[in-house]
Length: 174
View 1 (cartoon, rainbow, N blue to C red):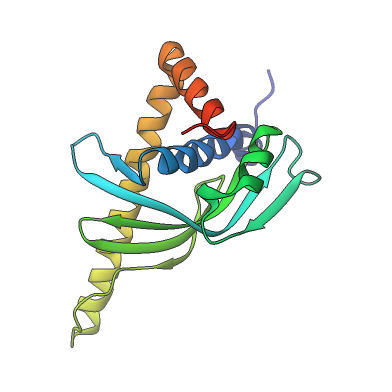
View 2 (tube, rainbow, N blue to C red):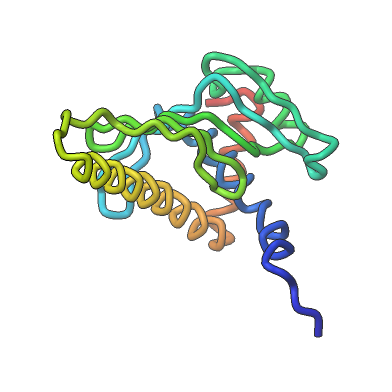
């Protein structure tokens, strides 16, 4: 029996990250950017300026689209209709009045994170603690969204309905 390395397992699971980001993009467009977390709290998710779409072979089938609002782009819808999925996106997230901006890729790695403004603290340890709390909150919210997606993805009936809605949106529906 062959044992897969961690890198191989990550590569095999990357499709799930692309599906999640694509779902998040489409749902963001359909739900006026508002998502309800499992505990009832709401988070707003906005896709901004740059979006990388990947086909089955990302090394050969990749395109980056730079538009103000990717959820309102015919070019994005066309790429999705050709089977591409979101591989990397610039996102703004508003949660409980705090605004985060970041880049996320299909491994769900966060890059170029801009945390919410915090009151000016005199103590450098307070500043560090505030940043750590903000990072934890961002990861928790993204995790909750991903878990909601995976639960739906594993339910064949819900996933079929979801795919129909995504397909309708890509085709130009609402």
